Amino acid sequence: MTDFLGLGATAVLACAIAMIAGGTVKGVVGIGLPLVSLPVMATFIPIPKAIALLLLPSFATSIWQTFQGGLFAPSVKRFWPLLLGMAIGTPVSVRMLATFDVKVLYLILGMVVAIFAALLHRSLVLPVSPRAELWAAPAVGAASGLVGGLSMLFGPIYATYLAGLKLGKEHFVAVIALSNVWATTVLAASMARFDLFGGTDFVASLLALIPAFAGLAIGQWLRGYINEDLFRKTLAGVLFLIGLNLIRKALD
Image 1 (cartoon, rainbow, N blue to C red):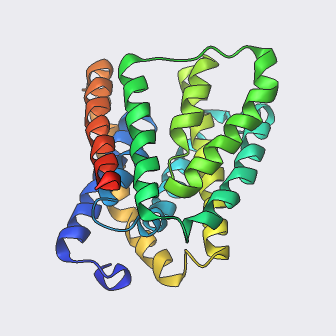
Image 2 (cartoon, one colour):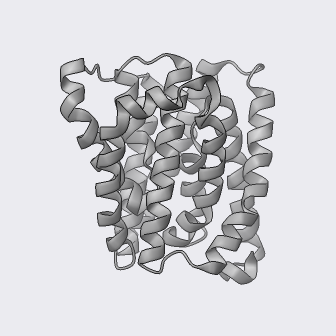
């Protein structure tokens, strides 16, 4: 992986640990692989490279969750406007990724992570009525695509939206996973089109499946032993500090 990404041993180790940590969070709560891994990795490697490294782990772990519980078809039927909006917003921002000032990327990533961490800590959700869902779904999808194309953090925006719909736990996880699969597919295609995801990136991302799935296995094992409320608040605190650190890097 070092040859593929031009990294030193410290950066490689940091990325592997970040993948394990992100996979563990995803195994426990169903989401969080890019949200946990990317801010840490972005401290050691350029954000475009970090995003490329996360593509296959994010896709593969979400595929596994998408088809659990028999909710794939109903999720597609109800949330296709969300997916359509994401397909429109993502290529627009990916096109800017190659030329975007890295400090602006750090600022966007840091702000998204810090804001989401604050919402996560307070368990804040915005109620969404069925009438509002008609226009909110494509708008949320497009906003998620715009942010996700620059940072791979599609989840914070649409996870907050989905929480407002008061879906059941299993349906929530299924829709999140479906959205992640779709978002990663669109993101990979967009990055490949703009020469931001090539053969060496694919191999490196393939190798990254190992720590990601190791973390996923750990998380699934831990799920029955961790108090979810305490875990959520601890995770929120860590993410908030990571977000502030990235904002600091942007302002240096």
